[in-house]
Image (tube, helix red, strand yellow):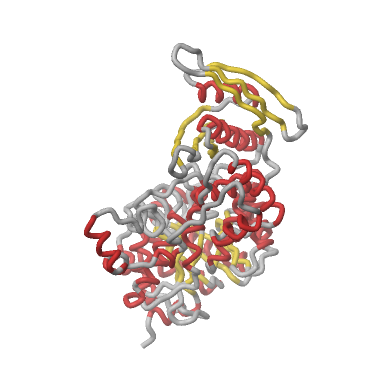
Length: 530
């Protein structure tokens, strides 16, 4: 009798799990996360070096920016498949096809909701219509690319007999991968196992497709559900770096991969992922999205390999495996960090960045090196975290969508003094400068008011977060903030040894993004997807 794993392994090496990364699509839909095309390209390059199998680069129909980003990723990524998401509508699929047409390995990922609640309240269609839509969507996608994935949205709440019909029909229509999403994080490991096992037992042509899973973390079970599906025969897992995604997020790539790697005795599976690149990429994604990784996050959190209890410390010193089931170096966490200073040269900087997972072109390296030297004049020692910030800043500036940059800042504050800020901004389109002054509740508030007046944009500060990047009196302060304009949120990030300057840099970044968003009449708000 053929096992479920063997059935789902069509064209796959036995025991090999495909890793489908959707950080650039579902991950960017995290509330507050926003990436420009340059940042998406850098993450995509690092995902390629990580050796994931598929990169879902975006949802092209959702906005011109998303279309451009998917097309840009398709142009540069050669080793991984590049997927574009589309609803089962002609317009969506044609847009997705155009976005990935130059990819070395293009994939179109179509989806259609199947659960009773979605059929009744969202699509307002009968079961027969849903099957027809799904088949037509797969057929149209297949006319453009050979690699077509189909997702029955909200599969975990879909009646099993109907789910069987849909899966069988789309495979017959040419779907090479069928993804079973737990769209709202409703499932549990036992429940999800039964769904996957049911499909293997009832879908007659299931041997012609790879079965995938896409789990959300609303109950904190996304990784557990994904691993349960693997044990039941699924051979592709959809996940994101740091578990980013809608609401509570998606299954975390680093947790899924390291669970399969560490407990190969249980799962009898492996991935192609270069695990030593996990931690640097986690840091990069955190820096660029502005979403911090919690300290106690598995695998990549600050405390993941930290030991404070005396008994634990003694055990680790005596033999690491007493309290560590993984080697930190296996996920890219080095035991020692090279400290650079103002006398360090360009070559030393490049070598350190390569070890951290960044391979910059000469122009980008020059820009980072210039900023590195400026920082070295203000800070005695520069650590990895500082370098991550410099790379993040350079990527953020590598875009033609900026309108304003900070030229100078002066603030006055103190007891018995009216807080005042004087700010000079340069318009990057015509190189003109504007200067203004404003008062506020404090020097940061005054600076924010001044910038808003100079930029001519009405925004509201919704979130402000300040933390130290490294230890010591000369540590850089990192500010993440979110502004609201026109009903949309725009995030900004800034770092400096001066926390007021860091705040202003973050504010200017967010203002620039707000200007782009408000000017784009065709920009569409991204919808919640499977």
